[in-house]
Image 1 (cartoon, rainbow, N blue to C red):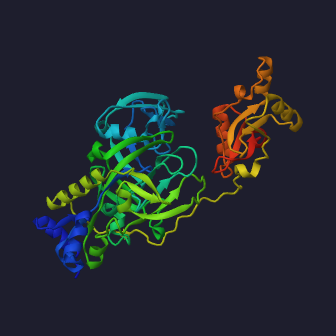
Image 2 (image 1 turned 90 degrees about the horizontal axis):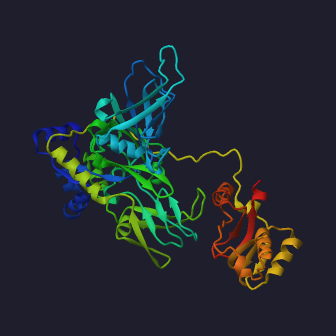
Image 3 (image 1 turned 30 degrees about the vertical axis):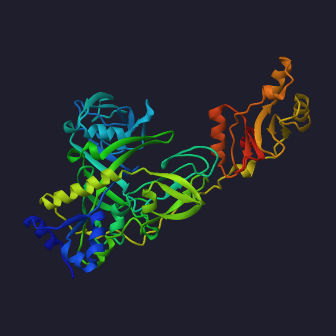
Length: 490
């Protein structure tokens, strides 16, 4: 049994099309079987709404009088990329404001633009004979510019990993705030509603596929960057007219101590052309698996701790080595369902027709990591042995070690090598000047630390940000295994 796009579009035109969401399709197949479902159902709608950092927009402002050829320009103090023709730009959602930094970025500019708010445009030029204007400072709304084209190089990952953190410090990542010692877990994606999970072989998804995008109609224009279908991390490259879109489905967001992004609503209709597609679109949350990955290890090849399915993820908790870990999603299932339902109504109402892809997405692409021409060094490559005093030592013992070992930093531990603090030669000098003799009075107990597998540039940044010159190196049990100082980094 097969159907064609023409037959399905004719049903849409005549008003007798049968459409269900991907979640509803699971139940249809359970109740009636694949063959009957393939005969009765014409289209399955999908939806996802979550952070899609590889998003942005091309804008054209028209020419000023006299005209300007932008060298640099800012939209609400967010630096946009010029590098095109005179008054075109690309605003990326992760670019942060020069003024408000982590509070506001390119994603917020796009949301404000779509909502009809005025956007401040500042720009400068090196001037030419045909573009003599040197500066512009004006404002515009979305209806006062020529084109506003959402153009997202990588959206709607087929699946996402579930992120956890084994380290002893809180991590601020693109997967959100990860608490230490497996204190929480974050995932993204909408499971059985996820667009690419419902057609993993891309029979109906490719260049020219018409989709729901940001509350309007958009198109897939190719494979997304980092498209890696061989390990179920397929992505899509999409575009659409921002003037047709809605603030409801394009939201600028801020991640604490990480940066800005844009939540994008994407929905893809899957035509049920054959029984195979009926079966694929009936995939359940229980059948969709992903990896739990430890972000506490700062390497590309982070450890994969186990596999979980989306049913467990959506339950709010995952089991990790016998520990019940609270789990939450970065994507909105509420809005994903609303997208699938909206797309369903558009099709049922004859407002949205399906078109076959001019070229299907590739299925054999393999993600290639960055080639590094210089070897990356880690703390373990440069650390030295730490000079240690126990927390029950007196100040004289500490001073003698500073002199005898010619070391400016003494690590204070208990008898089991557990870190308790740090003392510098300057601390000892101050203590003597103030007639202090108790080590506990001068010890710095709140210590900034590092680990063996931390890149040295991260360790250097810690020293700079905290205005210190050494970091104790500890293991996963808080035991001191060395020290790295500014001298080693130099």
